[in-house]
Image 1 (cartoon, rainbow, N blue to C red):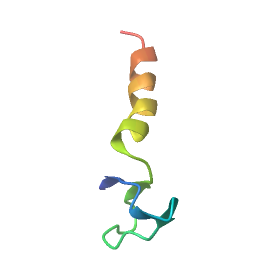
Image 2: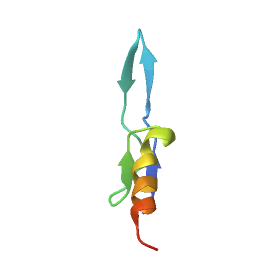
Image 3: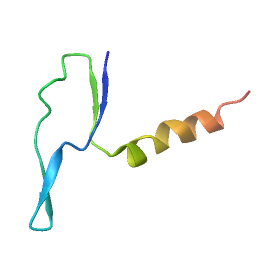
Image 4: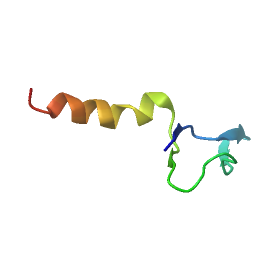
Length: 51
């Protein structure tokens, strides 16, 4: 499994225009966020784990 962390798109006239990723295969995880946004949730979950 591969995890893609990428908003994949571009800005045009002040509006974000997303487009599909070409590389993901069945079973891969796609998170359409920047690393700064997309990594916050897993980091926060790990911080809450006991031990």
